[in-house]
Length: 172
Image 1 (cartoon, one colour):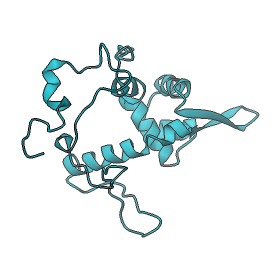
Image 2 (cartoon, rainbow, N blue to C red):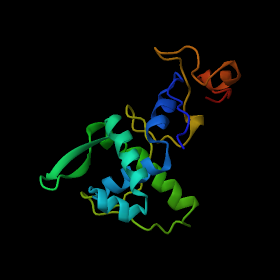
Image 3 (cartoon, rainbow, N blue to C red):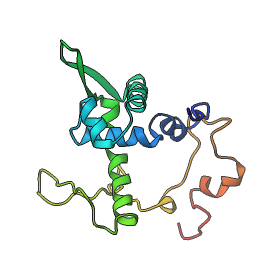
């Protein structure tokens, strides 16, 4: 059963969720990040039905998250590689892993990521790209109307507190 699209909403979050929000899509992307690039490997690794895997791979290729590359001519076989757009999902995937490890795995992760430069376990953090200060939650931010502000953004007047640079707090 196909789910309803939310791509009509005027929101980068909604448009991203429309592409990667289906759980099989996220698991396929995770597997490709981990080096599982062939159909049979993905099917075996994820325990996913062939028809569902075929459909999800088509969706991710159409969205330019994955590209399909021939690795064998006869019979024709393919590998699936992340595009630049797909590689840009690494930060989000790392944060999902961090959240899942903390809240659903009792901080006992099945796989840890080691930073190549220093050799330490990698734990993603959010920081401002301008000042490098840590961002720990929505209270560290304020929302401002962007160039595509308009209808169906998911934000209305009931979110006025978030649009206030002080976030409703006299201390900021």
